[in-house]
Length: 219
Image 1 (cartoon, helix red, strand yellow):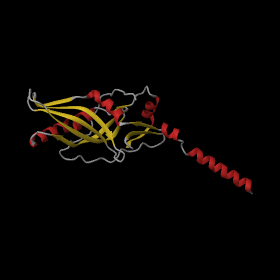
Image 2 (cartoon, one colour):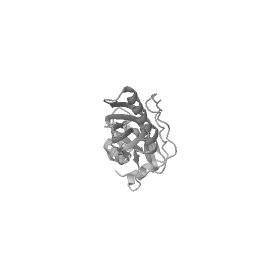
Image 3 (cartoon, one colour):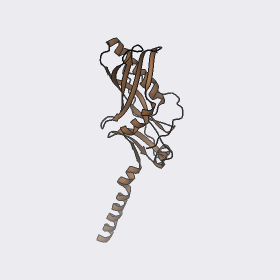
Image 4 (cartoon, helix red, strand yellow):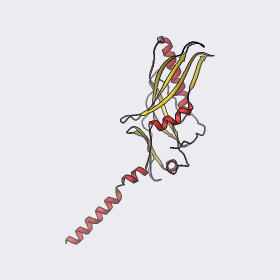
């Protein structure tokens, strides 16, 4: 009869409604961190400076800017570059950009995994010096700085970030933001994305070793 069929349809509809998460529920299952937010966390760690021979051939990196693109899984970090061949000589100015994919560390921090130097430009520097500066930048950022310095540290005083430490299921760049997805304990943790082969001469992107305990950052 009509009544039993109607009841069955109503039950099916109710089950369907319950099984589809509302926008509010979906939002609670995600944390999103933007480029400007991450930039603010990196900025206090700069400037970085390295000299090759005592106080000769000094490279200085300043003003990090973090960007993410809608259709790219990588995180891009741009820096201003200053190069001073000898003390007292005017510094040459340029810029550099590295990129890598986000990775989660059990110490509740997110790191830039295997960053590579994508581009470097500096006017008025001979090609051999430019290559030297590019190699120094690659070592400073890809091999050293980002192997120890997190992009973001989860703040346990923030309930949602504390929850992420307990129930994090994946971390990825989506629609121009770093998206942390939360899940239930019985849900499998998503594997890291496929490794990228470092580009020769553009940063070895060595795998990070043991890290010291990072300092939490709040939103």
